[in-house]
Length: 519
Ligand SMILES: Nc1ncnc2c1ncn2[C@@H]1O[C@H](COP(=O)(O)OP(=O)(O)OP(=O)(O)O)[C@@H](O)[C@H]1O
Image (tube, rainbow, N blue to C red):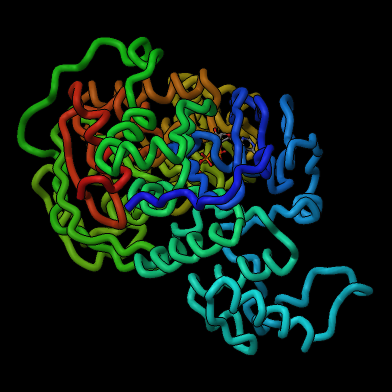
């Protein structure tokens, strides 16, 4: 149910506002002339895909970022929020997705931390003020409980109480429900409702449309750094949930110029018996258990795996590659069961994995490029014989791949960690796509790359499919998934919630699946 805004006389100015702010990072405009207003007593929801610019935008309110251009206003006055401490002085408190509390301390001791020593009140005083705030906003927290023993939802309540005790009139909740159980999220929604009735203003970032509609009074949608729409409270109420959902999905995922050019001619949809066949795959994982994954990929087919980051994509990819134990399921490559093989065994059969963790898991930064290109074949002929390295064979192999994959490097003996991200990715692609590759999993292959390297990497993915490889493309960038894939599977909360052909309706259908509108 959409909330009705709290009826109170409208003040002359928003409590905080951003006026045409622009924030650039190398290679990306994270916020492009975005304006944003927050009024007392409202929950203003920020929606947008991964990378749309939500965190950057609120970072300018919480003192983590300064805008390159544009103004930040508190109650109509222009301010400069250069630190989180300054934000707090101005009455703006932020609750991050990951708790900033000290788990080994009690709640009340956490509350007493932080202020300057001369103004630090006595413990009993802190406990009294905490009790008063808790009573006012209707939460029950044991002040003597150790923070580490509280649920994540309770820890968030502690953070909210702490922000209010420091005088916050604005609360920023950045993906606050991402780690919560459905019940925890519901409780947080109810708490937001009570806060707004006290005149507090809340900025709430979420990926979940149902939460946006249930808890929000006003909704702003960002896309690729731009504000693409705002639905004001009266309009939100007038639209009702179904029409509001349709409008938001259109704003978040609707067609936009510039994608057609990148794709090139559509490829003929590959058919045939699956080359890679996954059945009932499950992975035990404390944060996102993955279960019941069925997916088959034909030779030459690209299946995109779309979804908001952190919905089990990584666990799935690692289990497929052999880096994590399967709790259940079968994996067949060319008809052969490979789920019992280790990483090396699967690789030998032709299953490859291009990790998104290029520097951590993908390469050894201090090792030369030549060895990094053989990292998964150490000890194997012809590069090692009877345990002895064969420098000539290793060098020839490296020179060939560096040339073929256009890795820009002073030489094959250069430590790979010295290369740019784009060139490290080229080396990884060279390693994984060369030799007897038959199926390949790409995890966020263009993440963090510049435009030129993004284009080059996408071209490699297309070429791999054109050579007949079965491709799984994991990406949080829906444009990328739609540009490259033949079919798109959507992952949410550790499950595949739908698989659609990449046709004209795919964008909105995938958008709906990603935002949990349809199960
Ligand atoms: N400190 C930084 N340095 C370089 N680039 C950055 C930095 N912070 C953000 N970006 C880039 O700015 C863009 C917007 O990122 P931002 O984190 O604001 O998006 P978001 O909508 O919050 O995404 P998510 O839902 O994934 O948190 C992205 O392309 C991101 O890679």
